[in-house]
Image (cartoon, rainbow, N blue to C red; front, top):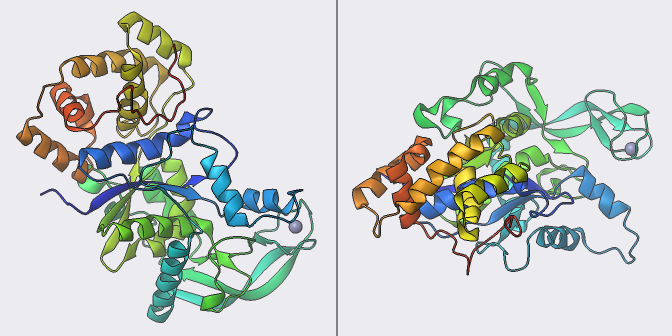
Length: 389
Ligand SMILES: [Zn+2]
């Protein structure tokens, strides 16, 4: 049965300095979510952004314009600058510091505190001797000001008490056929401490004062899960599938563990590999050989390759591109005038079960292209900039 309430979201992208035209690889998760939601017949979902970053704190602190603009405005402008003119996401954007995200986070924390799955306790941490930034539990130089000296500091923190026997990522947390988490994620639990501090010193983020921790914010690795849930809650989803690479999941999964379910809503990860967008010369040779027009190139790069990256979780390799394009363009030429409803039903089932193999079946791919509103040259939503001539 097809779930009407399963939506895909991109794992929140760090709001660093880049544009999608320069770094189309940063858009892979966004493109996967857009393509799969569209195939399921959903309206576009928001693009999700991670703005609670130390680099964002530092940029804002060192800004020379005076009076200093509100951080949220600076973050919003930096996000807007990533999109080429005319490509603003139709579903809008959500950041991990937005009010609805913060409200949901505090609601979840309050419930977890009363259930005892999270606690507030006095913890001995290291803080920078210069600026007071919390450097963590280990003694290393301050990443906020560069000061090498840290001192011990005892203060109240938000703490997750983990059951060390419970995996950080279990089968139920993964959106994959037969729900098997990859070995590296299943083994991750062994490296995570049993007590995990979820509060940080940051200039910006989800303020924890309301739960009794003034001056601290929720660790962004936890907060980005809440951003996904908040966006999913608005759409009345019951499953929110977040796109991520295995490495990115390893970085955030432990901190996100207490923030993956809420009142019947569940977050799952769907893993994907990188797309070799930097192989522009290989791509242009392939396009030339096949006399591919601009629309074909755009669809291949922004739709097919991201979907194929769901199959190649260790990354799509440059040498695969010629064969992949041949497969894709055959299917594109074989697009039927009307999609077969039975075949599309099966496709929906594959997508909701996390089976990514359909993308290599030519007839399914052809029907999928017909069923979905593939970007056309006139109205394409294009994130890579101009296609290679
Ligand atoms: Zn410092």
